[in-house]
Image 1 (cartoon, one colour):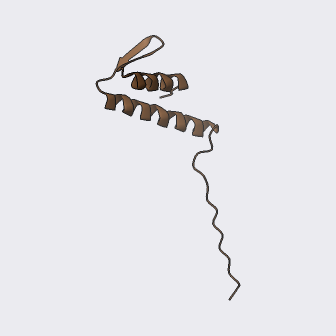
Image 2 (cartoon, one colour):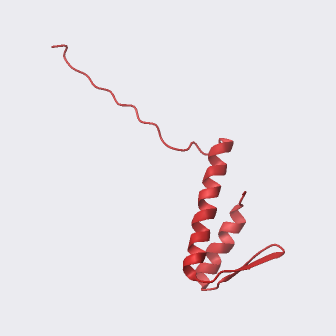
Image 3 (tube, rainbow, N blue to C red):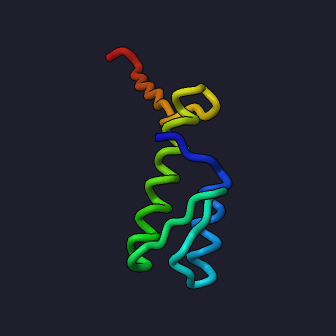
Length: 73
């Protein structure tokens, strides 16, 4: 499912204001608890990260390069 930054902002605003009802355009969702709202925020953040990584807008996990040296003995 694709998410937008405006959806994330609406969820975070609802959480900070203590509301459980969030509106996205013409749709309204009412969450049962604050924990369910926090779970929705985590899901949207994860979805946005996956979208950014799949489109190349975000590089994803950093790479590690390890080098070892010795004097040859």
